[in-house]
Image (tube, rainbow, N blue to C red; front, side, top):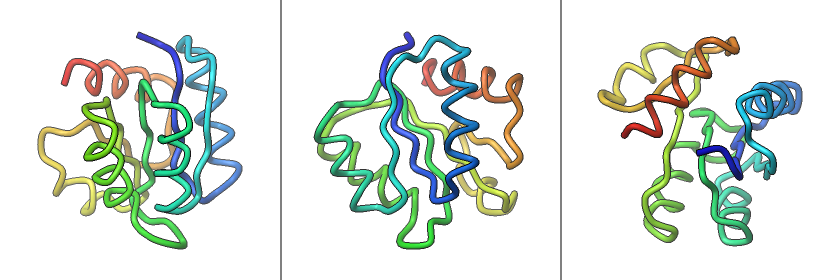
Length: 116
């Protein structure tokens, strides 16, 4: 399934770490967004095969960005990421990851997101 991943993350180091880990899982192209607006713009430029979305952005909300992308681009596997476990617990049935993200947990979340 690997292909193009959209990483919605406002912390550069975290975004680059996600890119490195996703690259190890076979993803070969990446787009980055630090705000809701940038995320939608990047999804319009290249439709992602996977989205990782930090829940709390400095400008906007990762979940709202994903909602807008899915409404415009159609179904796409999503992994929601946050350092706040309570925020993730509200996303029942979704692929979620608590920070810090480890390679093993990311691989498992990718499988969950792709399986739907």
